[in-house]
Image 1 (tube, rainbow, N blue to C red):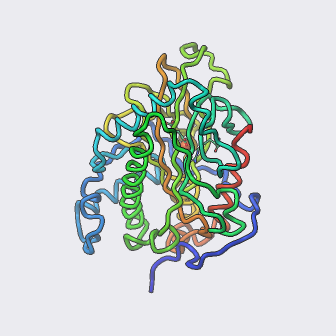
Image 2 (spheres, rainbow, N blue to C red):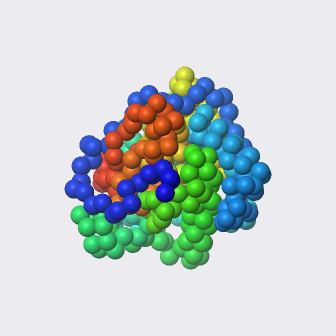
Length: 357
Ligand SMILES: N=C(N)NCCCC[C@H](N)C(=O)O
Ligand SMILES: O=C(O)CCC(=O)C(=O)O
Ligand SMILES: [Fe+2]
């Protein structure tokens, strides 16, 4: 049929070669000064409707998503259907966990042996060689031994959940399920925006999405309120996300997440209660041949309060070989800007260099 070729449909296993993926240096992000807020209600209610392409309300959502992804690579969503109580409870239970003594938290310590799953202390995650001022629990879709052959070895393991607070695991797993469903719906909107059929991504390389989940805490810093920030005060250094779409659940009342526009200005993603901050990852940048940008962002908690953020990352299948979609290549002058990237290789190249452990 005439659908744009988004992914190689076969499951391709390749030897590890982290140098093969090269991020593009020329950012497409424009000089946006703020991040748009989109009510995705119509998409959330019609996502599975076979006549979705005829719905004018969905079409308006799709138009706004497309504009936001072209201009900023970042947007807020409301009307997403995830209960506000769950969104808040997830942050509160995170706060409770991080307030426990170190000895308690380190019981679920992250290590290569756990497939890089578990708890990392402040300063153990590094971005571009500099330690980040955050602590976190990292979780990934679980990988059984042999599941992806050699390509999957590094990420083999099951998640490490704390036994205290006791309801932590159940609540987070419920939340992950809901974030996966929501991401699929938003990706359907983006598939339509790019001229494909709604389930394009699911059928071509994201049918078994490799999700990533980070439960993060940013401590109050000694130099917090001073004007002269030190490099060592950065909560999370400038980076792009790795996959397709990120859903950020951030604390209300603390402005800390910053997004870089084309001129190099840092635009704050000021919290809007009840919304998610969404952003595009590296795999979607490749798929769209750069029409959508995986925008650089960073976190600096200058406030006098401990900041909590729970980030869900919706990614392609682990073994997806990602190439620019034909429809997008045609829209951008017919030249492919990126070679093929195997998502699992991209993830492994990040994970194995992200930690001082
Ligand atoms: N799974 C994702 N996207 N995690 C984002 C973490 C970004 C910081 C990491 N040290 C880095 O340098 O990538
Ligand atoms: O803390 C935040 O607001 C965002 C964190 C982030 O960018 C990440 O973990 O990839
Ligand atoms: Fe990020």
